[in-house]
Image: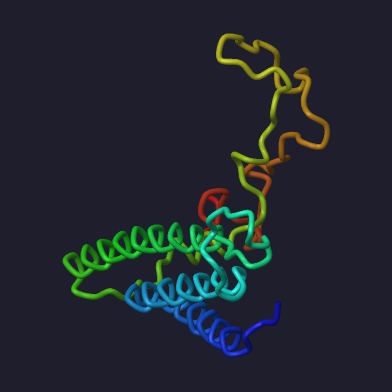
Length: 179
């Protein structure tokens, strides 16, 4: 089986432009990027099926190498249905955004910037985890006596009265001094 170079070039261009459009802040461009990516994926699935052959109907006189593989075609049909659903969902998001703000441009959110700048530590994920965790069992032991998973333990927090200087960061909102 030889590969069609034209289809590969078209796929590469569709993937490149689709990814570029996905990275934009406009929802309409994101929708166009998703549509280009799904079309490029359909072309990729089409090329995996090889060249056109006979219909996959069983007959003893026809060698199996001359049959067409129906699986990539089934994948393409599934991909088309999924892309229609995602396109409809994105169109509803764009319409709702237009009704609320008369724009489909996603604004830069201060909360997103704050989350991106925060330290790696997360209070919920990095907290102490007891080995026996159950809704039906109350653990009356103090945190120091509890048996925990190795490598995961409570973070040592400096009390507010001991912390000093501009280096200290508020545990909930970074860049604010502790009160």
